[in-house]
Structure formats: C-alpha cells, structure tokens
Image (cartoon, rainbow, N blue to C red; front, side, top):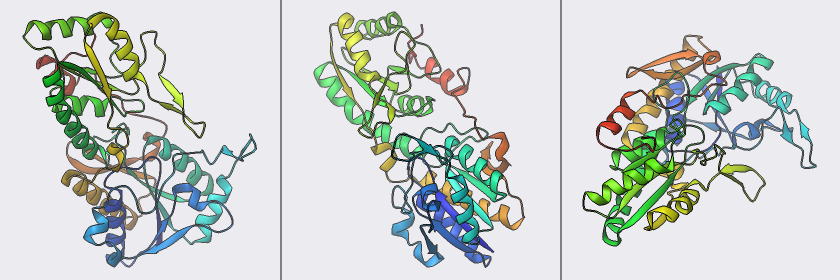
Length: 357
C-alpha cells in the first residue's frame, strides 16, 4: 500500500508533526509514504514533485520545526488555475493523473476548509481515496472543535499582546492590535480573552463607534488612560464593507481595519492610538505542546482510517475525543464563532466589550 501526503493552504505550526505522525504510523504497518511538495502544485505538470518519506527522517528537530518542510500553496484553484496570460486553465486532470502515476492508494491532505473543498472535488472526479486532517490558525473548519496550528497562534498572539501592555500603560496609549482571521473571529476572541483585552472586535458581532467610545470613557473613569483593542482582520468598516488591499502579486487580501479604526477613533477619543499586528508570526511560530499532541493524534488517526478502509473522512475532535466525519459534511463550509457560546459569554462576564453595547 502507498499513501501520499501534502500540506495545503497557509502554513502554521504543527504541520511537520502531523506529516511525521502519518509517516511513522504508516511505516509501522508496512505502508509506504510519499510527501508531495508545494501542495497541489506538486501534482501538476508532467512530473510530480515529491519525496519518499521514512520514519527515520522525523527527528525531534524536524517534528518541532515551524511551518511545513514539504512546502504549501494558497494561490490558485486547480479548476481555474491562472495561465499567466490573463486566462485560466482546468488543471485538475493533471493532478489526478499524477496521483495515479505515483501509485498512491490514498491521498492525505492537511489543510483548511477551502483546500478541503478543492481536493475533495478533485478526488471525487478522479475516483481517488481521500483522508483530511484539519489545520488552520483561524480554527474555522466545520465539524471539528480544533484544527492543528490554532493554539500555537493563540499563544503567539497572547504573548504579543502582553508585550504591548507595559508600553500602553506607561505612555497612556490605546493599542489596536489587528489579528489574522480570514472569515471568523476565533483567533482574535481567544487571544484577546487570554490577554485581558478591553475590547474585542470580531466579524460575527456587529460593532458601532459609540459603544467603543463608551467603553473607553468607562476605562478612563476607572482611573487609567490606556486600553487594548483586539480586532480580527475580517471585521468590516462602519459601512459594512470588507477592508482589503491588493498584495504585490495582485491577490486581494485582508488588512487595514486597524488603521481604519485608528482614524475613526482618533477623531473622537483625543488619545494617542497605535496600531500593531503580529502578522505572519502567527503562522511561523513554534508549535505548542497542545498542537504537537493534536497533530500526532490526527496523523495516527488518519492512518488508522486507511487501515480500516474508511476513506472520504476528515479526522476531527468532538467533546475532546478524536473522531472522523464524512468530508462531504465539511467541504465548502466554515465554522463561525458562536455568539451565544461560552467564549463570548465569558468575555462579556469579565467586562470585555465587543463594541456592540
């Protein structure tokens, strides 16, 4: 038996541990593992880009190394792949052909909800077995409580916010920290709660300027002139528009809500406001023990599913248990913050504002 494994979408902590867990567990059962480089791009073209993996490769140094040694991509849908001339090609058949050329019985993908939808459609089209391991710093993959990489990003964001606290306090500064989170506010919510932020803005809860000003005034009345505001990059402006920009490559990305809020609040608060962002350190950070454990549990479970001839499944966590769900229940969906859930309830009970009241 031969399996292929690839990492897809944005990178994060714990990916190497997940790949290593799959390889080691597979080797224990006489299964050969091939690592596909650069995500689905490694399966395009005439010759697939891959390496043979073995258990000996996964030393402590590699297992704990941030990001992914296989490389990944979050650019281009293989069904509509840019041809470099302003048009698009469907390159899904190339991927299917190369999977079969390599003799791969089951493909294991490690990625988020967008990558899952794409790989699910490709493997369905080609009749290829698929197992999925969820990873994302956004923690927005549906049907699972946790994705690999999330808590490492939370820890890094929390440290970043804590390091800003002393400066904010010393200089009476309002610190606005913009946190990654493509469509959901899990990362901003968890890191803001951990760091005892005064205000947390997430896309799931509409905010208004008056509520933010009211919260700041209550802070001043309590005897301090500094505040911490954590905002998810996916939060919209006051007119309900996404705050986005074009990257150097021409890709439209989030970024700028922090500066937008600084301009709006500066007109009213008459306070010194600074905008900060941990940026891609949330992706390239070292994995925490929790993510190392989760990655290994998910990797082992993926191989277990293959041995049980149970494919078309995503490994998941429910009520603290490692389970599996049908990928068809997950593909094309994402999990937003539950605005009536425990995390939001806890934050409100601790007098953290969401800018809505």
